[in-house]
Length: 259
Length: 303
Ligand SMILES: Nc1ncnc2c1ncn2[C@@H]1O[C@H](COP(=O)(O)OP(=O)(O)OP(=O)(O)O)[C@@H](O)[C@H]1O
Ligand SMILES: Nc1ncnc2c1ncn2[C@@H]1O[C@H](COP(=O)(O)OP(=O)(O)OP(=O)(O)O)[C@@H](O)[C@H]1O
Ligand SMILES: [Mg+2]
Ligand SMILES: [Mg+2]
Image 1 (tube, rainbow over the protein chains, first blue to last red):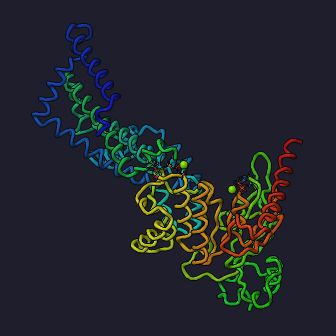
Image 2 (image 1 turned 45 degrees about the vertical axis):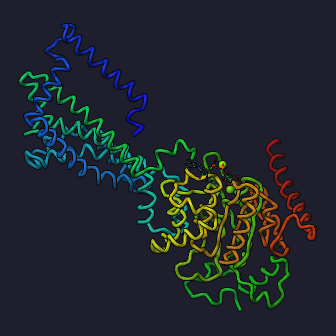
Image 3 (image 1 turned 180 degrees about the horizontal axis):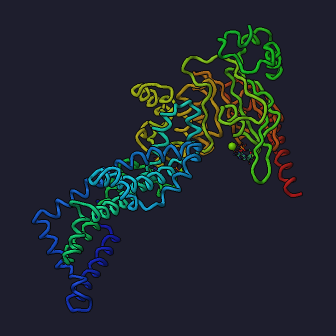
């Protein structure tokens, strides 16, 4: 819990507070357009209203559910293929060109094709999110498995360790820090894509809420959603840090111990 | 009796170019010819290093690390290898361990393996403890690979952790240990799986002189207990004389075995023992050889 009250944290809080106060003040005084930049107090009021009516919670839940399933659907294959590519050079050489070619394709551009293939609905959206999550997960897992010091693999082959043991005890655990770094990127990209696709075609979700906000010129609502998305980013970061501390406790402290 | 007459067919040495009788004869020579007929018959062989050469090639040309390496190792022999830095000691150990292939030549194993026994286990020069496992899991990794179940791994590991003074650190991660403790853990990982051949690459390098003495004692005790063949690389001439049945002195690159010296001192040995003046001679002899090799190397750099 020391991390919550450290000095750097307070500096951040103060800077953010100054930013919001300046915004509040200049929007109130008419320095910036109150219409395009509604004061934070009004955004906050709208957020409370939306929460009270249940609209915000409901849409947040919809977005989180989509993100969760999309993340699993794309992350698990990305993790496994990535680890194998990092571990086995031949698989890596075989698949790298394919991955490199597919990676930069804007996934959202594939949405129409998915709609044709899977129809309008959750399936198309999950697959789209999965595609977005797949690549960063894969690239990071691959790098994680690749950076393993070969001497660890020598130790394993010295005692005739089976491939499964090598994967379970060496490749997987030692890649975890990279895997979590990848998961953080993947969750953020996944969130971006979830919200974008909700704007295009959602019945509900934060993206839909935001889109309605624009259409009905309720900018407080748009800003409320943006604010919530920011908080989700913080939550993702906290989640990843917790996972790192829990599943890879050796990594966090390693730097200090000159190991 | 032939050295590998009791072998089952599938564990016959890969190369049979050298007839067993010849092997035994050479063995008699390489043990200083001190074995009489009876003890020659009892003398079991562990492995034979047959004309090994290892060449590393990179963009900057190739380096012949070792060349013409030949020796025979007895089954319960403690062989120390000394040599100038960079001469290929680690390379040789890795080849014996089967972790690297020689450019030419071979290592032939001349004794049968018990089921579930490892041919060799190595203590790596850079330790290679897994940072993501605690000490207990680290030292028990060899057993885990051998398929020993968890409870048994635990009891065996704890027993030896205690013996090496690491009892309170089973749940710690390697980065929480001191340099010397890490080294002990690395040693433990190798001999916990009771290999036939124990390959040790400067295992006590990071220990203080006192701990080193205690650890050397402990190592000798364990060696007597398990009777493995030990190949022990060290920079320290005194350590080599103290521990080894034989000291192999390697030359500078491309290195071969310059001398194969039998240490005929009774154990337990004490280097300060005045009753064995030959210790000083031996030390001087090896020291002289190594100095020459190093001078050659440094000289060739100056030219
Ligand atoms: N993977 C490699 N690629 C290229 N050259 C190598 C490689 N490994 C070792 N060498 C070369 O082989 C030679 C012997 O290396 P090795 O590590 O076996 O020496 P060593 O006797 O163990 O030295 P030290 O006492 O310093 O540990 C060195 O000159 C090194 O440059
Ligand atoms: N990062 C750490 N976390 C927890 N315990 C530690 C850590 N670093 C060292 N220790 C403990 O502190 C003690 C002293 O460690 P240190 O590395 O200073 O010993 P040292 O005198 O350098 O020993 P050596 O001669 O073996 O290198 C050890 O018992 C070790 O378990
Ligand atoms: Mg070495
Ligand atoms: Mg120290």
